[in-house]
Length: 448
Ligand code: HEC
Ligand code: HEC
Ligand code: HEC
Ligand code: HEC
Ligand code: HEC
Ligand code: HEC
Ligand code: HEC
Image (cartoon, rainbow, N blue to C red):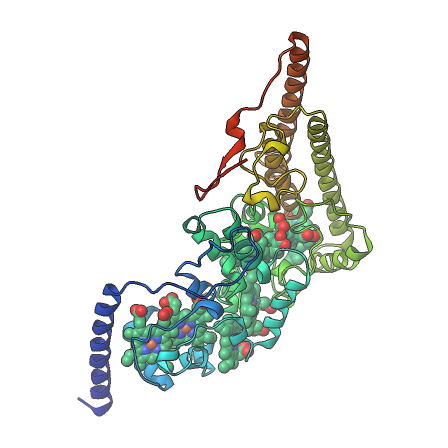
């Protein structure tokens, strides 16, 4: 046995011993409570506690090393021991550009094992300042975005406002994209080629509220990528001439920008307010979109498509307005059951606006409006802007929106008829008491 081989064996043996010691202790010891807390401004901020996984999902605030392994190690030692301790991670790292460029474990995690760090964007910024700057610049717009996701959706509102903590784990993982750079280039390969493919976005951007994958898959762009994508060289940057059809990143991270919302006209506002895409503030953004389309299409073709799409969105808002007017009339004439002024306050009140947002303990017609506004109308703008051929009109989108509007009208007629009957027979209707008690998802009762 030569010396190098002997050394390796010795190392392997040491690692195994440490590993078994470690595994014994970890299984017995109860997890320490996480004490640090990102202060949000949700309604239940005082009751809110981070879950254990926040150590990795918001490492800058919550990560603490567990102190099981002692020592300050050189790069090679990390690799040797971790080839045994975490073989999957070490294998991936060995195949990565980082490994070839000499970016060893300690460059990202530190060398002192008792002070091991979990890298957040600021740690990557040492070597990739441009991407981190772009990424953070998303905070300069009002849009919900990657750089604001955890706070906007998680800490400040969602987690504290609406749900019990254990119900929100998947949601928190989705929103953790704010706090780490490994959401699209999976660790420890950190590969740009992977991030360029739609699947790197799709595992988050699917399902109710964010069906972009479904829209894309039912577009010509998605179809071509599926049919022909295996033949493409994904190592090439997202620029003219390199791809036959656009992927998510081609359109949203054009030429490598890490700000995915810089061109957004509707994004996130789609359900909140009507947007005039011709307004001054949007002219440059629309030009930027056309510039991307123009890699493959004529400007005339692309701008006609986007203008038509604007009209589709306009119609969808006209219907929302119609529904809103009907309900506001009912509120004014005191015909809603229950009337909003008789309801106890609710943690989701903040999201409520004048109508919409509040999901629990509302009249059936208001609830229908919320579904119409927040879910059905919300699918119309992104389906048409992703060139989906079916989802805009069938199953979701306008189909469901029309259904909601019809139900709202029917319910309004019924309430009108009841009013006439009440007056005719001289009956006096009192609201049921059950409306005045609301059970929140954390089983906290509030009585009015
Ligand atoms: C002698 C063996 C050994 C050496 C050398 C070693 N580690 Fe570890 N390391 C471990 C063990 C054991 C764990 C716990 C693994 C587990 O939880 O399954 C660990 C855990 C980690 C974790 C995960 C922490 C967490 O809580 O998620 C990181 C990151 C890490 N090591 C990085 C390093 C780096 C960087 C070096 C070199 C500076 C290094 N390790 C050297 C044994 C070692
Ligand atoms: C380019 C920076 C970088 C390098 C180099 C790197 N890591 Fe990591 N590592 C990360 C990031 C980012 C995370 C995830 C942080 C998070 O989830 O908040 C991570 C997480 C981990 C984890 C915990 C998560 C898990 O899945 O168990 C371990 C263990 C780990 N790294 C070990 C290593 C080892 C061993 C090496 C060297 C072979 C290494 N890392 C090299 C960036 C790096
Ligand atoms: C010590 C410097 C250093 C740190 C820290 C570092 N990187 Fe890198 N990274 C490099 C070098 C060098 C390259 C290869 C040359 C290049 O593309 O710039 C690279 C390449 C990359 C690539 C492109 C790889 C490819 O094959 O397409 C990605 C993605 C990446 N890094 C992400 C990260 C992330 C995320 C972090 C933080 C978790 C990070 N890096 C931390 C130095 C670093
Ligand atoms: C780990 C989950 C995750 C991954 C992966 C991910 N995103 Fe996101 N994305 C989010 C979250 C969370 C938001 C915040 C808005 C929301 O709640 O939908 C968001 C927002 C966006 C927005 C802005 C939407 C708006 O309403 O303003 C765009 C555009 C976007 N992502 C594109 C992409 C693209 C392109 C990719 C892949 C290259 C990608 N995302 C990968 C989770 C993810
Ligand atoms: C929403 C998905 C997504 C997130 C989140 C993301 N990246 Fe990227 N990253 C990409 C895509 C797509 C590319 C390829 C861009 C191109 O082709 O020009 C890329 C490319 C890179 C490259 C290689 C650049 C080059 O020219 O080779 C680096 C370095 C990088 N990203 C670092 C980061 C860092 C640091 C973060 C955290 C702030 C991060 N990325 C977060 C999708 C993402
Ligand atoms: C052909 C270009 C193109 C492709 C490909 C594309 N998008 Fe989009 N995307 C758009 C346009 C245009 C908008 C509307 C932007 C605006 O607000 O003006 C949009 C909007 C969005 C939004 C905001 C939706 C909302 O409800 O707020 C998200 C998120 C998004 N895209 C993610 C994705 C994902 C994920 C993929 C891949 C599955 C993808 N996009 C593929 C062009 C594209
Ligand atoms: C990287 C090239 C590329 C980019 C960028 C691109 N497309 Fe396409 N697009 C295609 C290809 C290829 C087809 C398939 C043509 C066919 O149907 O035969 C297509 C199909 C379409 C279709 C449906 C087919 C048709 O003939 O009507 C529409 C609409 C469309 N694109 C609009 C856009 C818009 C708008 C943008 C910019 C937001 C855009 N595309 C960006 C390549 C691209």
